[in-house]
Length: 367
Ligand SMILES: Nc1nc2c(ncn2[C@@H]2O[C@H](COP(=O)(O)OP(=O)(O)OP(=O)(O)O)[C@@H](O)[C@H]2O)c(=O)[nH]1
Ligand SMILES: [Zn+2]
Image (cartoon, rainbow, N blue to C red; front, side, top):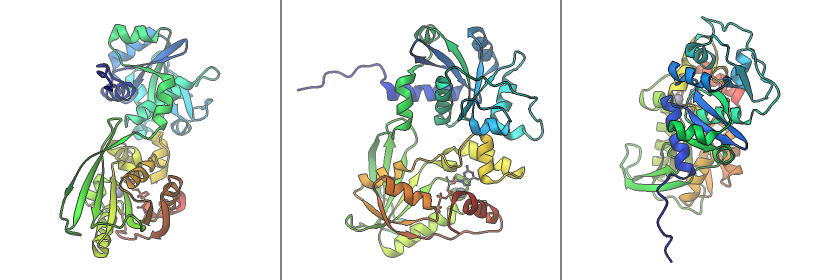
């Protein structure tokens, strides 16, 4: 029996990827919900002309995460998000200043900000999640509309159905194994690189397999999160580069291991936002405070990805190279046993001493 031809039109996964790309380009997206919907536009990338068009459509709110609202002393009546009513005279620069904390100290916001209470904030919450999943600052402009499908059709905008999107954002994307090839490394000549591609259009993740580890034994393993500054540039602000090299060297010496290189730069906020966090750190905030001021949680990574790749490669137990107990907990929760933690203490410099101390104090890392 054949499945018949696939429809030419995009499915939910594909429409969502398109929606994320739209938001990154400053194009609004339409959310449809029972009996209505909303136009949304990312605060970071929105442009003035489109703000005027949104205003013409209805009352505009700026949705912020509870973290960002707390920094701005705006009352988050909706718990994890706050709906700020856009003042009549506010322009896109005002909206961007609400989203981006870089100017908080130099130009304190003229407050008080008026936040909405009562009513349904679920579309606002979804808008915030969507822009975050597009790796933008987690703040969005939201305008309620009555006929979502009509808005999308008339203006050629991407239409997403809120009820379908919300659970989808929570779910782990499918992962396709794309290719594997031999790559002799300085640390280990018998290395192979495996590429995994998420079905949601997000960045690929890599596994570096050293030797031919026995699938029946716990494998020496590291879940390394991408750090462009540390891994490639030799930044002294963190310990990532030396950790990457030390992990590969240890695997080379033991003759077997698997290092996952997960493209979750900046603990999942992306390189641009990590650099925003660094700029805040230069203003005196620590690594956790900087994430919060930007509107993010301390750690936005999804370690289910790592567990999934390990499982796909046939591993069920790891000797995990880490100082982060949360990683061990996540692996165990995702069905990967961690019978042993292997400490990884390298790359400490006077530049990163405070950073490492804050990770120990606030994020539970073991020093
Ligand atoms: N948001 C943010 N991310 C950072 C900062 N410094 C390093 N990172 C990122 O943090 C990730 C590394 O995570 P860490 O918390 O240092 O270490 P870990 O991987 O949780 O734990 P270990 O296994 O012990 O190394 C990489 O993705 C880095 O890009 C920072 O100041 N802010
Ligand atoms: Zn780093």
